Image 1 (cartoon, rainbow, N blue to C red):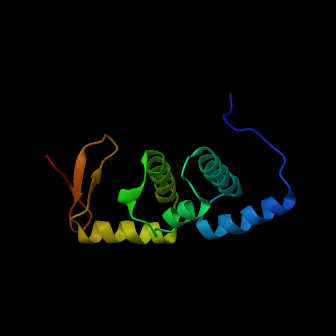
Image 2 (spheres, helix red, strand yellow; image 1 turned 90 degrees about the vertical axis):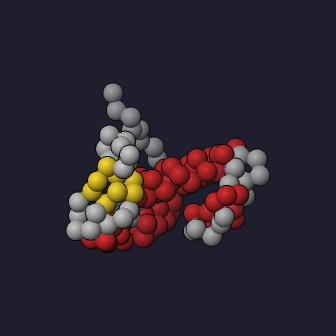
Length: 124
């Protein structure tokens, strides 16, 4: 069973999504899904304003001031952005591997630190 469904959308909306998607390194469907998630959260979340959501997505906010729902949405969108290949992410990853000292989790959830030149070590 597929987790995807087809829907009809106005061509002007699809064209707007196409333009935004190319800038943000998303598929057209991914862009429409992103807009739908934002709209759902803005409409259902008390205290949300479009300006506040837009500021958060542009990095113009204090993350300590996010409420639980805002933080969850931000982290989901941030993870989605990082998982999509683009030149900026690839350059950052190359820098991390070359310099070393960056900390994160491996595929099994163990804490690791990158070493200069591309290796890594487990952190206890």
